[in-house]
Image 1 (cartoon, one colour):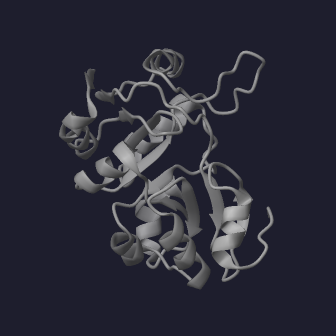
Image 2: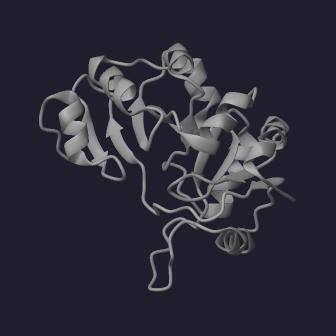
Amino acid sequence: MRIVRPAELDSAACAIEAGELVIVPTARWYMICADASNIDASGSIFKGKRRPSGKSLAYVAPSLAVCEQHFQLGAEARKLAETFWPGDLALLLPWRNPEDAAQHAAVGSPALTTIAPGVLGELAARAKVPVAATTANISGDAGPDDLGPAVTLDEVHVFLAASGLTVSVIVDGGVCPAANHMTIVDCFTPEAKLVRTGLVHQRAVTAALGREVRTS
């Protein structure tokens, strides 16, 4: 396992392309990433995190143009993407091609899709394969001592020890300041529905769409 700085991100991209796992920082917390089309690599994340199979990883698109190649964006989805991407917002989007959905089962159908800022977005832009990502923590561990997803390298190592996962590269981004989730909006139907609030506030989603948006 190598620990590198964000300036050395090419090594993380190469690891993803080779079917290995990497961990990168975001403003929210550290994320564990794999090739979204690699069943074994993505599957190992589900197993290590003890994550339910129906709880998808996020598809991190490198650009809106690439996103549009694979997914259908209705008027409201496009408005949210243009307003908040890159950013801390994920959209549930329908695939254009059922074969793509089958090849990227880890990110679901509709797919949890985002264009991320910072290191995670740069990783998606550099990798020659689609990137799937999720938080570095054990799923469903909400006991009194649960800190949530890792926000420091020490917490990343605690997660790796608990999960048994092997990663090839960890990008050291220091302390992640926000410790909060992405906002998720369901754009599978023409009228978008708020699934989960996070760093992008419900009021911001409402303002972007010009109508009141409530949690579904």
